[in-house]
Length: 377
Ligand SMILES: Cc1cc2nc3c(=O)[nH]c(=O)nc-3n(C[C@H](O)[C@H](O)[C@H](O)COP(=O)(O)OP(=O)(O)OC[C@H]3O[C@@H](n4cnc5c(N)ncnc54)[C@H](O)[C@@H]3O)c2cc1C
Image (cartoon, rainbow, N blue to C red):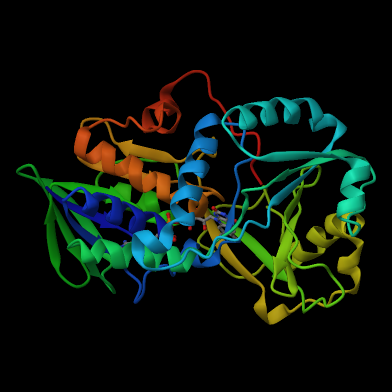
């Protein structure tokens, strides 16, 4: 079976590896001169297990395990550092949070719940006013998304996969039971197409006359200069009251806040007006930021690929040999390993057994009852 994957970000790379391992003929097409130049290069690189949806937790567990053994698997280290994720919880969230922690712990997630006082003792730089507590995930942390992408590609190539760079896909045509793919460079044919085009996913689907609800939204990351008198590395801390997050990056702090009123667009210029709003919410909780200068030149913005319910679209489109692995919001890095496994099962067995992906299939959009992940940042 010949499979063409469109997009060599962390998702396309993982799928290429997992499919090649099963012996399929895999071709990976990327429009940029190198892999991992899209959202993958722009992420905060976080990996966490603190989700409300059981399959999101399981996908993090699967991926964390694979990233921990990544060097054995691919020859490259994922540089997985378990610095933790610390979620700051207020009274309004407490009940839901306790319920979520129960679910996470029942799956074997290592979590510590700290009262507001204990949070203050451990993390003196946080203003804990208004908090009831926090939860610290011991297996949460950060990885290196580019290293993972290149590792998967190296391992996939060793198994026979082919990578074509500077190869923008321009059109898709299904004829005589095969896909004809026109690119800027050359034409390809395939039995199956996998859409792993990140924020550009809806445009790829359109080429196959399919409509999928995935839109590109800008997300900014601001970075301070070095802060010497700080106990680095901090966990990735998320203030659930405001949505502000931060973590150490070497001796610096990166921080951000999603703008949920942002209009969908392919816009990757840093939003400096948003910085003011971000700081107005960040400073009361993290007063030490007041004394940290901003490294304006190093701030960046990238794109989230977002669906209406913030869950990805995974698997085969109805009555088609067109597959999606798209719409990962801020979770594509931490779920990429699991997504590779899921798509490999779906393509080869026409079903997925290692995860229950019913809430992630395209068909869910025609259901009456919609479900949501509670912990979207
Ligand atoms: C600011 C920010 C912070 C984030 N933080 C985190 C985090 O902490 N943890 C986490 O897990 N995730 C995080 N994410 C999300 C994560 O980065 C994405 O979910 C993930 O990188 C998606 O990978 P991808 O391979 O689907 O997309 P991409 O990396 O965008 O790859 C898609 C590829 O498809 C290619 N492509 C598109 N169209 C075509 C075409 N026509 N022909 C050929 N190639 C094409 C693109 O060039 C691109 O290389 C963050 C994202 C942003 C922007």
